[in-house]
Image: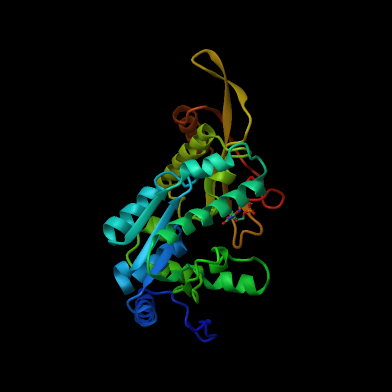
Length: 327
Ligand code: XMP
């Protein structure tokens, strides 16, 4: 496959018309490259993999096989949305793997953040590779690599996962249809392809998912508290017009209990920490100035709706000194 580089003269894809032009060119190129062969894609539901999937569906239909691995650390409603949008609306050939128990069993008792990340990354590749081995006649592996990934890899800043992450017996050719795009262009193309706004304009979500927000050793009950409080926060941000304005917002549940009181009785429950930050490049970040009334409303909802939670805090720390995630 020719290695595409972004021509210096390339116009920024900022309008629906330019997005349509890009889509038409890519669809023609993908058809020429793929012919009647089959393509495999790990579809996380993030912007880049979703746009990659939608482009490939447009180009080669059910010659694309999408695998959505639910590692049990996704946000509330995410796997359901991937299934609804891709299987039901776009008629994609989608394999859904609920690997929750596998991941949570491997993570049981592991408190070190980097060890957690390694387990999640390694297990993900294993689950994906197992699915790939079950399939016959796959020639290509599609990836949602984007232009900043290439620049960062070349600059030695980040090592981006690529086909190299898969075991040697899975020797696929790479297809990277959004490789020359910047993030804002991927979103414009995604919108032109008809993907829903809450998929195309969604906030960044780390690969290890809620796993790094359930601080220390993950337990199912505390993970549920992270997932439910995150869903409330997202719902309230949506209602209050903050969803598209704040760069990243989520909740964290630390691994300790504090004393509380409910129905006249002493409780020992978890606190929920709210984090809402703005940044350009995630290297530094400032804290969103949230209205006090909204913070009080969030506190009331989270302490009454989320099991095992009796206290809510707002993290006022910019980066530095705090990182955006808690671990
Ligand atoms: P930190 O916590 O380092 O986060 O200030 C900066 C940005 O990176 C995201 N992040 C990750 N993304 N895998 C990812 O794909 C990870 O392990 C990971 N850790 C942090 C974080 O959500 C924030 O947007």
